[in-house]
Figure 1: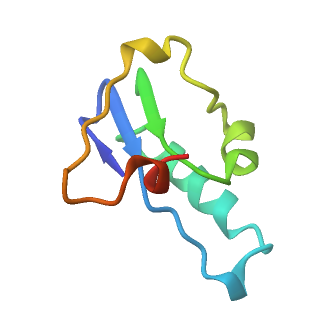
Figure 2 (figure 1 turned 60 degrees about the horizontal axis):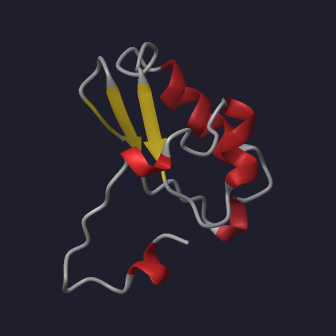
Length: 86
């Protein structure tokens, strides 16, 4: 998690090992992050997920309301964007 502790946060790389999935650990981890003092009053809290929308939407995440206001820059040496964020 990256944040300035006031206006912006980015949640990244939340991974639960396959053998521990289905035990509520992802929900617990997200709840802990949201309750952290640096995160409770953030104006924007972003994340990218390919397949875990069901984990995050109950906590209030939803599609960006004005997606045209958001830009992304990829390292030209990174995998193509279709493999990173889809």
